[in-house]
Image 1: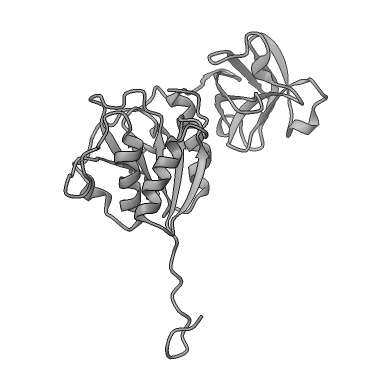
Image 2: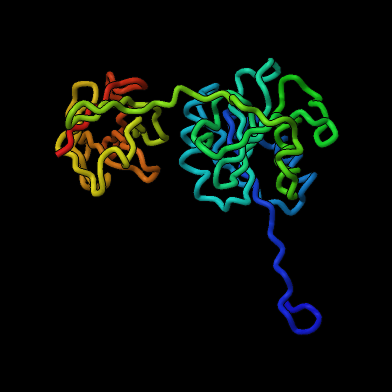
Length: 270
């Protein structure tokens, strides 16, 4: 398509809005949020990150955002609702990380991975931009979705309300170093039963220098990928999200006794 004079017509960017909730895909609640978004932006591209975050599990939601959000264009807007405190004094916010990524949701630690140096956080408080929520129990539909749509049209996050200096942060799990050993914890299980840990790839060296991995007293063989293990074997590997994972080939590590959230993971380097 060419504009008058022979120049190519400017290509209009389609707004991208992602959704992450613990509502359940079949609950009807995500559909209501999408209805609000499409009512404001009929041509928006809506992407479901997940609606199957374990109920009220803010840490699991934060880890999913950490894994997914960096793979989208920075112009995308991310609307995330894992919100056990909905309707209470917890604040609704828009977080803008150092790269310019915008996330809308509750101020309960859900955006911890994006609150590093250079991040800015604004409370959703300007009623000249956003109407007061119609329901005290569904801010996803009545507040966060309208805010995400407004941002996707080019709205300035600073207009949403006052800047916050101390947003809520989760006690973000970091491993400990003891000589040539790194000690961390299992955090959450994915849909395959693989356990994500608090140990990241950066803690293991490049390339990883791992001589032994033990989890809850069991030895897990460190491999490059799942297929390097035998069927039923307990494995450790750096997953696609950049964290050390504990896995069972063609099985579920999370189903093994003692391998649950908080289980100790020890990695010996060398």
